Image 1 (cartoon, rainbow over the protein chains, first blue to last red):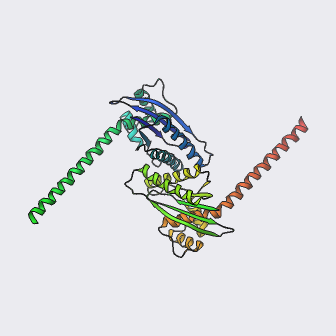
Image 2 (image 1 turned 135 degrees about the vertical axis):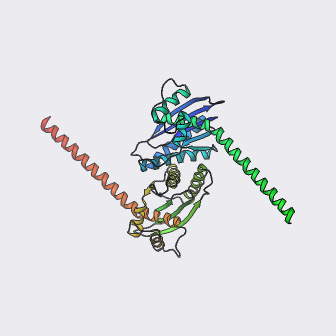
Image 3 (image 1 turned 90 degrees about the horizontal axis):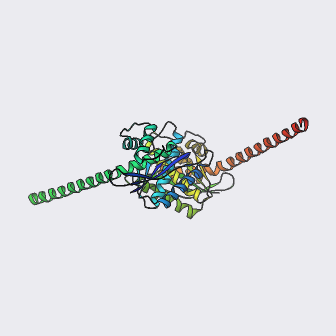
Length: 189
Length: 189
Protein backbone atom coordinates (compact mmCIF):
# COMPACT_ATOMS: atom_id res chain seq x y z
CA UNK A 1 0.00 0.00 0.00
CA UNK A 2 1.28 3.44 -0.99
CA UNK A 3 0.40 6.02 1.68
CA UNK A 4 0.70 9.81 1.51
CA UNK A 5 1.48 11.25 4.96
CA UNK A 6 0.56 14.86 5.72
CA UNK A 7 1.75 17.03 8.60
CA UNK A 8 -0.66 19.89 7.83
CA UNK A 9 0.25 23.57 8.12
CA UNK A 10 0.25 26.88 6.25
CA UNK A 11 3.77 28.09 7.10
CA UNK A 12 5.19 24.59 6.62
CA UNK A 13 3.24 21.57 5.38
CA UNK A 14 5.07 18.23 5.43
CA UNK A 15 4.24 15.77 2.63
CA UNK A 16 5.56 12.22 2.34
CA UNK A 17 5.01 9.06 0.35
CA UNK A 18 5.73 5.72 2.03
CA UNK A 19 5.32 2.29 0.48
CA UNK A 20 4.14 -0.37 2.94
CA UNK A 21 5.18 -3.96 2.25
CA UNK A 22 4.46 -7.23 3.99
CA UNK A 23 4.69 -7.19 7.79
CA UNK A 24 6.27 -4.01 9.09
CA UNK A 25 8.44 -3.35 6.03
CA UNK A 26 8.10 0.31 4.94
CA UNK A 27 10.07 2.31 2.35
CA UNK A 28 10.28 6.08 1.86
CA UNK A 29 9.47 7.13 -1.71
CA UNK A 30 9.44 10.92 -1.37
CA UNK A 31 9.31 13.67 1.26
CA UNK A 32 9.09 17.44 1.04
CA UNK A 33 7.90 20.52 2.90
CA UNK A 34 5.62 23.08 1.23
CA UNK A 35 5.96 26.63 2.56
CA UNK A 36 3.70 29.68 2.16
CA UNK A 37 4.58 33.19 3.39
CA UNK A 38 2.76 34.49 6.48
CA UNK A 39 1.86 37.79 4.81
CA UNK A 40 0.06 36.03 1.94
CA UNK A 41 -3.75 36.10 1.71
CA UNK A 42 -5.22 33.10 3.62
CA UNK A 43 -7.21 31.83 0.63
CA UNK A 44 -4.07 32.04 -1.55
CA UNK A 45 -2.06 30.11 1.06
CA UNK A 46 -4.71 27.36 1.10
CA UNK A 47 -4.61 27.31 -2.72
CA UNK A 48 -0.80 26.89 -2.74
CA UNK A 49 -0.96 24.02 -0.21
CA UNK A 50 -3.86 22.31 -2.05
CA UNK A 51 -2.10 22.65 -5.43
CA UNK A 52 1.11 21.09 -4.07
CA UNK A 53 -0.78 18.20 -2.43
CA UNK A 54 -2.80 17.58 -5.61
CA UNK A 55 0.39 17.48 -7.70
CA UNK A 56 1.71 14.83 -5.31
CA UNK A 57 -1.51 12.80 -5.58
CA UNK A 58 -1.33 12.95 -9.39
CA UNK A 59 2.37 11.97 -9.51
CA UNK A 60 2.45 9.33 -6.76
CA UNK A 61 -1.14 8.00 -6.90
CA UNK A 62 -1.34 7.04 -3.20
CA UNK A 63 -3.91 4.44 -2.12
CA UNK A 64 -4.60 6.33 1.11
CA UNK A 65 -3.92 9.76 2.61
CA UNK A 66 -3.06 9.96 6.32
CA UNK A 67 -3.40 13.41 7.93
CA UNK A 68 -2.52 14.48 11.45
CA UNK A 69 -5.65 15.26 13.44
CA UNK A 70 -5.30 18.79 14.81
CA UNK A 71 -6.22 19.76 18.34
CA UNK A 72 -6.26 23.26 19.78
CA UNK A 73 -2.66 24.14 20.46
CA UNK A 74 -1.12 26.94 22.47
CA UNK A 75 -1.73 29.25 19.54
CA UNK A 76 -5.39 29.09 18.49
CA UNK A 77 -4.78 31.10 15.30
CA UNK A 78 -2.12 28.62 14.16
CA UNK A 79 -4.36 25.65 15.01
CA UNK A 80 -7.13 27.03 12.77
CA UNK A 81 -4.75 27.47 9.80
CA UNK A 82 -3.39 23.97 10.41
CA UNK A 83 -6.91 22.52 10.46
CA UNK A 84 -7.77 24.37 7.24
CA UNK A 85 -4.61 23.13 5.48
CA UNK A 86 -5.51 19.54 6.48
CA UNK A 87 -9.09 20.17 5.34
CA UNK A 88 -8.21 21.25 1.79
CA UNK A 89 -5.89 18.23 1.41
CA UNK A 90 -8.63 15.86 2.69
CA UNK A 91 -10.98 17.47 0.13
CA UNK A 92 -8.47 16.93 -2.71
CA UNK A 93 -8.20 13.23 -1.74
CA UNK A 94 -11.99 12.84 -1.48
CA UNK A 95 -12.39 14.35 -4.99
CA UNK A 96 -10.01 11.65 -6.30
CA UNK A 97 -11.80 8.87 -4.39
CA UNK A 98 -8.73 8.27 -2.19
CA UNK A 99 -9.66 7.24 1.38
CA UNK A 100 -8.53 9.69 4.08
CA UNK A 101 -7.59 8.76 7.65
CA UNK A 102 -6.81 11.10 10.53
CA UNK A 103 -4.38 10.02 13.24
CA UNK A 104 -3.73 11.93 16.46
CA UNK A 105 -0.16 12.99 17.33
CA UNK A 106 -0.08 10.46 20.19
CA UNK A 107 -1.23 7.62 17.91
CA UNK A 108 1.60 8.51 15.51
CA UNK A 109 4.21 8.75 18.29
CA UNK A 110 3.02 5.46 19.82
CA UNK A 111 3.18 3.72 16.43
CA UNK A 112 6.75 4.73 15.57
CA UNK A 113 8.41 4.94 19.02
CA UNK A 114 6.15 2.78 21.21
CA UNK A 115 5.57 5.84 23.39
CA UNK A 116 2.61 8.20 22.84
CA UNK A 117 4.41 11.07 24.56
CA UNK A 118 7.75 10.80 22.73
CA UNK A 119 9.42 14.10 21.79
CA UNK A 120 10.29 15.32 18.27
CA UNK A 121 13.88 14.13 18.55
CA UNK A 122 12.81 10.56 19.37
CA UNK A 123 10.25 10.52 16.56
CA UNK A 124 12.86 11.72 14.02
CA UNK A 125 15.41 9.15 15.24
CA UNK A 126 12.92 6.26 14.95
CA UNK A 127 11.65 7.40 11.53
CA UNK A 128 15.26 7.52 10.27
CA UNK A 129 15.91 4.01 11.63
CA UNK A 130 12.62 2.42 10.48
CA UNK A 131 13.04 3.72 6.91
CA UNK A 132 16.80 3.04 6.87
CA UNK A 133 17.56 6.62 5.77
CA UNK A 134 21.22 7.70 5.46
CA UNK A 135 20.50 10.86 7.53
CA UNK A 136 17.66 12.33 9.63
CA UNK A 137 14.95 14.02 7.53
CA UNK A 138 14.75 17.79 8.09
CA UNK A 139 12.88 19.91 9.07
CA UNK A 140 10.76 18.23 11.78
CA UNK A 141 7.67 18.59 9.54
CA UNK A 142 9.27 16.24 6.98
CA UNK A 143 9.97 13.63 9.69
CA UNK A 144 6.40 14.06 11.01
CA UNK A 145 4.91 13.51 7.55
CA UNK A 146 6.94 10.29 7.22
CA UNK A 147 5.86 9.20 10.72
CA UNK A 148 2.20 9.79 9.76
CA UNK A 149 2.53 7.56 6.69
CA UNK A 150 4.37 4.81 8.62
CA UNK A 151 1.69 4.97 11.34
CA UNK A 152 -1.00 4.51 8.71
CA UNK A 153 0.78 1.60 7.01
CA UNK A 154 0.90 -0.20 10.35
CA UNK A 155 -2.49 0.83 11.76
CA UNK A 156 -4.59 0.46 8.58
CA UNK A 157 -4.69 -3.38 8.55
CA UNK A 158 -5.55 -3.34 12.28
CA UNK A 159 -8.28 -0.70 11.81
CA UNK A 160 -9.71 -2.70 8.88
CA UNK A 161 -9.73 -5.92 10.93
CA UNK A 162 -11.44 -4.05 13.80
CA UNK A 163 -14.07 -2.62 11.45
CA UNK A 164 -14.64 -6.09 9.94
CA UNK A 165 -14.95 -7.65 13.43
CA UNK A 166 -17.41 -4.96 14.51
CA UNK A 167 -19.51 -5.47 11.38
CA UNK A 168 -19.50 -9.24 11.99
CA UNK A 169 -20.54 -8.78 15.64
CA UNK A 170 -23.34 -6.39 14.60
CA UNK A 171 -24.58 -8.90 12.01
CA UNK A 172 -24.52 -11.75 14.57
CA UNK A 173 -26.48 -9.62 17.05
CA UNK A 174 -29.03 -8.73 14.36
CA UNK A 175 -29.49 -12.41 13.46
CA UNK A 176 -29.89 -13.28 17.18
CA UNK A 177 -32.59 -10.60 17.61
CA UNK A 178 -34.42 -11.83 14.51
CA UNK A 179 -34.36 -15.43 15.78
CA UNK A 180 -35.58 -14.28 19.19
CA UNK A 181 -38.46 -12.36 17.61
CA UNK A 182 -39.42 -15.42 15.54
CA UNK A 183 -39.36 -17.70 18.59
CA UNK A 184 -41.54 -15.26 20.55
CA UNK A 185 -43.97 -15.13 17.67
CA UNK A 186 -44.07 -18.97 17.55
CA UNK A 187 -44.78 -19.12 21.32
CA UNK A 188 -47.21 -16.18 21.69
CA UNK A 189 -48.54 -15.74 18.13
CA UNK B 1 -21.48 44.28 -5.57
CA UNK B 2 -22.79 40.73 -5.21
CA UNK B 3 -21.46 39.10 -2.03
CA UNK B 4 -21.66 35.47 -0.94
CA UNK B 5 -21.88 35.21 2.86
CA UNK B 6 -20.75 32.00 4.57
CA UNK B 7 -21.45 30.87 8.14
CA UNK B 8 -19.10 27.87 7.97
CA UNK B 9 -19.86 24.50 9.54
CA UNK B 10 -20.06 20.78 8.85
CA UNK B 11 -23.38 19.98 10.55
CA UNK B 12 -24.96 23.18 9.22
CA UNK B 13 -23.27 25.61 6.80
CA UNK B 14 -25.18 28.83 6.06
CA UNK B 15 -24.83 30.25 2.54
CA UNK B 16 -26.28 33.55 1.34
CA UNK B 17 -26.13 35.91 -1.63
CA UNK B 18 -26.68 39.62 -1.00
CA UNK B 19 -26.60 42.37 -3.60
CA UNK B 20 -25.12 45.64 -2.31
CA UNK B 21 -26.36 48.85 -3.93
CA UNK B 22 -25.49 52.50 -3.45
CA UNK B 23 -25.11 53.66 0.16
CA UNK B 24 -26.43 51.09 2.64
CA UNK B 25 -29.01 49.54 0.29
CA UNK B 26 -28.74 45.71 0.38
CA UNK B 27 -31.02 43.04 -1.12
CA UNK B 28 -31.18 39.32 -0.35
CA UNK B 29 -30.89 37.17 -3.47
CA UNK B 30 -30.71 33.69 -1.96
CA UNK B 31 -30.11 31.93 1.36
CA UNK B 32 -29.83 28.27 2.32
CA UNK B 33 -28.29 25.92 4.85
CA UNK B 34 -26.22 22.91 3.75
CA UNK B 35 -26.26 19.98 6.18
CA UNK B 36 -24.03 16.91 6.43
CA UNK B 37 -24.62 13.97 8.80
CA UNK B 38 -22.32 13.69 11.85
CA UNK B 39 -21.60 10.01 11.21
CA UNK B 40 -20.31 10.72 7.68
CA UNK B 41 -16.58 10.48 6.90
CA UNK B 42 -14.92 13.91 7.53
CA UNK B 43 -13.41 14.12 4.02
CA UNK B 44 -16.84 13.30 2.52
CA UNK B 45 -18.49 16.01 4.66
CA UNK B 46 -15.93 18.56 3.41
CA UNK B 47 -16.60 17.39 -0.16
CA UNK B 48 -20.37 17.87 0.26
CA UNK B 49 -19.90 21.39 1.71
CA UNK B 50 -17.37 22.37 -0.99
CA UNK B 51 -19.60 21.02 -3.79
CA UNK B 52 -22.60 23.00 -2.53
CA UNK B 53 -20.56 26.22 -2.21
CA UNK B 54 -19.06 25.75 -5.68
CA UNK B 55 -22.54 25.25 -7.19
CA UNK B 56 -23.56 28.59 -5.59
CA UNK B 57 -20.46 30.33 -6.97
CA UNK B 58 -21.23 28.98 -10.46
CA UNK B 59 -24.91 29.96 -10.33
CA UNK B 60 -24.66 33.35 -8.58
CA UNK B 61 -21.17 34.47 -9.68
CA UNK B 62 -20.43 36.54 -6.54
CA UNK B 63 -17.80 39.30 -6.75
CA UNK B 64 -16.58 38.50 -3.23
CA UNK B 65 -16.93 35.75 -0.64
CA UNK B 66 -17.22 36.74 3.04
CA UNK B 67 -16.55 33.98 5.58
CA UNK B 68 -16.86 34.09 9.35
CA UNK B 69 -13.45 33.94 11.01
CA UNK B 70 -13.49 31.04 13.44
CA UNK B 71 -12.04 31.20 16.93
CA UNK B 72 -11.67 28.33 19.36
CA UNK B 73 -15.10 27.81 20.84
CA UNK B 74 -16.26 25.81 23.85
CA UNK B 75 -16.04 22.69 21.73
CA UNK B 76 -12.59 22.42 20.13
CA UNK B 77 -13.64 19.51 17.90
CA UNK B 78 -16.50 21.57 16.43
CA UNK B 79 -14.22 24.60 15.94
CA UNK B 80 -11.78 22.51 13.87
CA UNK B 81 -14.56 21.20 11.60
CA UNK B 82 -15.91 24.75 11.26
CA UNK B 83 -12.45 26.06 10.31
CA UNK B 84 -12.05 23.27 7.76
CA UNK B 85 -15.47 23.95 6.18
CA UNK B 86 -14.52 27.64 5.86
CA UNK B 87 -11.14 26.61 4.44
CA UNK B 88 -12.52 24.48 1.61
CA UNK B 89 -14.95 27.27 0.63
CA UNK B 90 -12.11 29.86 0.66
CA UNK B 91 -10.13 27.47 -1.57
CA UNK B 92 -13.04 27.15 -4.03
CA UNK B 93 -13.26 30.97 -4.25
CA UNK B 94 -9.47 31.33 -4.71
CA UNK B 95 -9.58 28.78 -7.57
CA UNK B 96 -12.19 30.98 -9.30
CA UNK B 97 -10.21 34.19 -8.65
CA UNK B 98 -12.93 35.52 -6.32
CA UNK B 99 -11.50 37.62 -3.44
CA UNK B 100 -12.15 36.16 0.03
CA UNK B 101 -12.57 38.20 3.21
CA UNK B 102 -12.83 36.93 6.76
CA UNK B 103 -14.87 38.87 9.33
CA UNK B 104 -14.98 38.09 13.06
CA UNK B 105 -18.35 37.44 14.74
CA UNK B 106 -18.06 40.75 16.62
CA UNK B 107 -17.35 42.69 13.41
CA UNK B 108 -20.49 41.16 11.89
CA UNK B 109 -22.64 41.87 14.97
CA UNK B 110 -21.32 45.44 15.18
CA UNK B 111 -22.03 46.02 11.47
CA UNK B 112 -25.66 44.87 11.52
CA UNK B 113 -26.78 45.78 15.06
CA UNK B 114 -24.28 48.49 16.09
CA UNK B 115 -23.30 46.26 19.02
CA UNK B 116 -20.39 43.79 18.82
CA UNK B 117 -21.83 41.66 21.63
CA UNK B 118 -25.42 41.40 20.31
CA UNK B 119 -27.14 38.02 20.73
CA UNK B 120 -28.46 35.76 17.95
CA UNK B 121 -32.04 37.08 18.39
CA UNK B 122 -30.93 40.69 17.85
CA UNK B 123 -28.81 39.78 14.82
CA UNK B 124 -31.74 37.88 13.23
CA UNK B 125 -34.15 40.76 13.94
CA UNK B 126 -31.82 43.36 12.38
CA UNK B 127 -31.05 41.16 9.34
CA UNK B 128 -34.81 40.72 8.76
CA UNK B 129 -35.36 44.49 9.01
CA UNK B 130 -32.31 45.57 6.93
CA UNK B 131 -33.23 43.23 4.07
CA UNK B 132 -36.98 43.92 4.39
CA UNK B 133 -37.80 40.21 4.61
CA UNK B 134 -41.43 39.15 5.22
CA UNK B 135 -40.31 36.81 8.05
CA UNK B 136 -37.16 36.03 10.04
CA UNK B 137 -34.74 33.68 8.21
CA UNK B 138 -34.35 30.27 9.89
CA UNK B 139 -32.29 28.55 11.20
CA UNK B 140 -29.82 30.96 12.87
CA UNK B 141 -27.11 29.83 10.42
CA UNK B 142 -29.13 31.29 7.52
CA UNK B 143 -29.48 34.64 9.33
CA UNK B 144 -25.75 34.58 10.17
CA UNK B 145 -24.82 33.95 6.52
CA UNK B 146 -26.95 36.96 5.50
CA UNK B 147 -25.38 39.10 8.27
CA UNK B 148 -21.89 38.13 6.99
CA UNK B 149 -22.75 39.28 3.46
CA UNK B 150 -24.34 42.54 4.69
CA UNK B 151 -21.28 43.20 6.87
CA UNK B 152 -19.02 42.72 3.85
CA UNK B 153 -21.15 44.99 1.60
CA UNK B 154 -20.82 47.76 4.18
CA UNK B 155 -17.22 47.16 5.29
CA UNK B 156 -15.64 46.45 1.88
CA UNK B 157 -15.68 50.09 0.62
CA UNK B 158 -14.24 51.22 3.98
CA UNK B 159 -11.53 48.53 3.93
CA UNK B 160 -10.68 49.45 0.32
CA UNK B 161 -10.46 53.17 1.21
CA UNK B 162 -8.23 52.30 4.18
CA UNK B 163 -5.96 50.15 2.01
CA UNK B 164 -5.79 52.94 -0.61
CA UNK B 165 -4.98 55.55 2.08
CA UNK B 166 -2.26 53.30 3.52
CA UNK B 167 -0.75 52.74 0.07
CA UNK B 168 -0.84 56.52 -0.57
CA UNK B 169 0.86 57.25 2.78
CA UNK B 170 3.54 54.62 2.09
CA UNK B 171 4.20 56.13 -1.38
CA UNK B 172 4.46 59.65 0.11
CA UNK B 173 6.90 58.40 2.74
CA UNK B 174 8.97 56.66 0.07
CA UNK B 175 9.11 59.86 -2.03
CA UNK B 176 10.11 61.87 1.06
CA UNK B 177 12.96 59.45 1.84
CA UNK B 178 14.16 59.56 -1.76
CA UNK B 179 14.17 63.40 -1.74
CA UNK B 180 16.03 63.39 1.57
CA UNK B 181 18.67 61.01 0.20
CA UNK B 182 19.11 63.22 -2.90
CA UNK B 183 19.50 66.38 -0.79
CA UNK B 184 22.09 64.65 1.41
CA UNK B 185 23.99 63.54 -1.67
CA UNK B 186 23.89 67.14 -3.03
CA UNK B 187 25.27 68.50 0.28
CA UNK B 188 27.85 65.78 1.11
CA UNK B 189 28.53 64.18 -2.30
